[in-house]
Amino acid sequence: MTGQLAFVESPVQLLNVLEWAHTQNPGAAPPTGDPADAGPADATPPLTVVVLSPTDPMSRGQLRRMAQLARDQGLTVRWQEARGGRGALVRTLRELARPLRSAERVIIGDPFSRYVQLLLTLFAPRHLTVVDDGTATMEFAAQLGRGERLVRWHRKGSLGPRELVLAPVTSLARRKLAPTRGRTVEIFTSLPVEAPPGVTITENAYAWTRDTFGPPRLTGGADLVGTSLVETGVVDADHYARVVSELARAHGATRYFAHRRESAEKLHRIAVETGLQVVRPDLPLELIARRGPIGRTVVSFPSTVVHTLPLALAGTGVKVAVIEIAPEWLRATASPRAQGFLSGVAGTAAHEVDRLTTRASHPADRLEFG
Image (cartoon, rainbow, N blue to C red; front, side):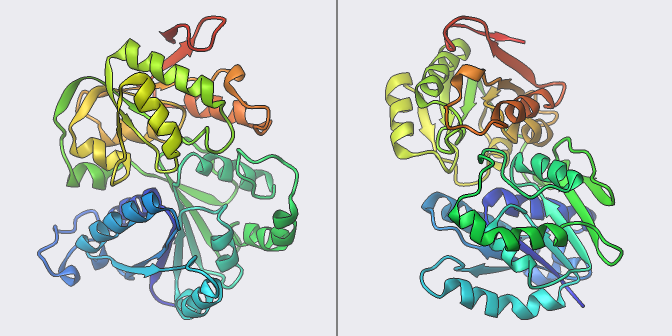
C-alpha cells in the first residue's frame, strides 16, 4: 500500500490535517509557486485530502478557502460532492474504493461521522490518524477507551430509527478505529485527552498556523466567540442571548464571531439586542485570530477554541476567557451528559485561560472571573 489519504468534512478538520502534515515535514521550505516543489507534499508517502463536501453554504465556503490554502502548501485536494443528491453516496464509494484500498495511512477528522464510519467498513488501513474536529475528540477518546459505542456527547442515549439501521455500521467502525496487532491508531490533538490502550497521542501545537500567519494587530476591548449550543438543542436560546448581552457590556466587546452552524435568526437577534457586529468568518477562528485584527480579550463559551486559541495566539498578548455553562441554561431536551461534558471542556482549558462564572439568581445578572 502506498500514499496517505485524509477525509475531511469541516474547515477545522482540514486545518488540523495541515497541522499534522506540518509535523511530518517541519523543515520544508515555503511554496515557490509550483505545488510539486514545496510544502507538506514533500513528505513520503504523499498525502491526498478528500473533502466530503457538506451541504450548508457556510461550511462549503470555508472549506473552499481552506482547500486553496492546502493546495498552496503543496497538498493534493480532491473535492467530492458526497452529499450531492440521489446516487451521491454510491458514486462516492465507487470512486474512493481504489485509493482507500491502496492507502497506507488514513486520516479522519470526525470518527462520529456516519459517512466516515461507512467508509471505514470498506478498508483496513495499517495506520489511522484522528485529528481534532472540536471537543468531540475528548468524547471519542473516552468512549474508545471504555469500549463503548460511539455517540456524540450532545445526543441522548436512546436509539432512533436511523440509528438502529446504522448500528451495525457504527459497531464495525468502532472496531476499525481501535488499534490491533496490524493497525496503529494515533490521535493528533490540542485537547487534554487520556490515551486509550494502544493509542498514540500526538500534540497539535498549531505550529503551522503560527509559522504561516501573524502576529496579529490587537484592538481595544474584547471579541466574543459564538457557539452552536442553541442549534444542537443543548442551551436555552433566551439564556444564551441574555448572557451574550451581559458579556458584551461587561467586557466592552464590539464583535461577535459566529459559529458556522449558528442560525440567521439567532444572529439577527444578537445583533439587534446587543449592538454587536456579527462576523461570519471565512476561515477557522484560529486563522482569523492569528491574521488579526483581534481583541486583546477573547471570550468564548465552552468549545475547542478555549484550547486552540491560546496555542495559535501564543506570545501575542491576547487573553482568552471561557464562560462556564450554568445548569439552568440547559434545555430539558439536552443530553444528561451535556452539563458534565461542558464543565469538563471549560475546566480543562489551559491554565492561562480565565474562567467566567455566574453568581446570581438570574443566570445573566452578574458575571465574575473565577
